[in-house]
Length: 52
Length: 338
Image 1 (cartoon, rainbow over the protein chains, first blue to last red):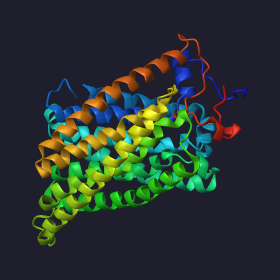
Image 2: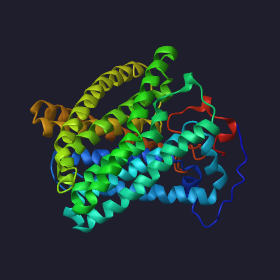
Image 3: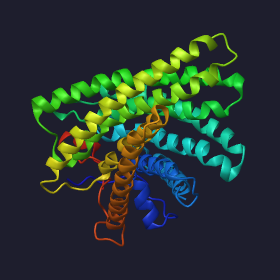
Image 4: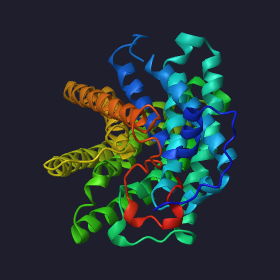
């Protein structure tokens, strides 16, 4: 299905960033949940700054 | 290092999402009627909660006493976002979305669990605050726990009935079976932390004589929930083994393999401390290794998916990954325009 995108495309944004902004969805925040909890788990293995 | 990287990730995603709203407001508003993407609004406070917890655990050694003030500020923001997700998303489900029992998955839990994740952050923070503030934070954390755990546990039962009556969700939703472990493990961790901090937090208050029995009640609840979580780990493991007999397509929903098991690991260690159990500690180490390895796989595949959808890859105009590719249930108007 093809939908015409009518939202404005500011020319000042490089294509990569423009694409990332256009397609961004909040489910990416799940990556910060997962990465955050892994940092906390690694923190329990020892208070070694390199780990967390 | 990883925690710092996570702060960078959260900041990057916040900027991207703010710009997405600013430049593509129409498209951004459309997720309110999206049956899967709207649930992901709950992941924003939960991502923030892991950062606040890091400021409590690692912050003082890295940035000094200011870390606790930062953690306190982040926690308050987290509470606001968690309450907004916990009330707002169910309302959207009732009024703007069309759901059916066969299409239900553990994704429904995401907006509800945010409040109990905020409760865990509050309970981790509470003993680092001035004595006068501790009682209030403890009360708020219990209320946040209760805004989430009872309803989430009820919804988990509905999920079991759904799997009995309608069989397993499609392979694109395979990781969602782990989401049921989220509220169980977070509920257990919350009660375990509560049992550890309640006596200190209520010392010198009129409730001081009750603090010891409250600690015991918290420990009992934590242990029972943890046992229930152990059953879910077994069930979700068996379900996953069954899914992986055939190819399981990657999508952002794979992050559901990481967070619930990570929280269950933390709950196992918290109970290992309280029960002084080497067995539990060892189990936590095994779970922790599994979580870290799973994180590596999911993180690498996520980076791979970004690469493929970038102009350098071959799929530059791919629509947003809904995380759990549930296209069948998505109204055409909610499909991101290309």
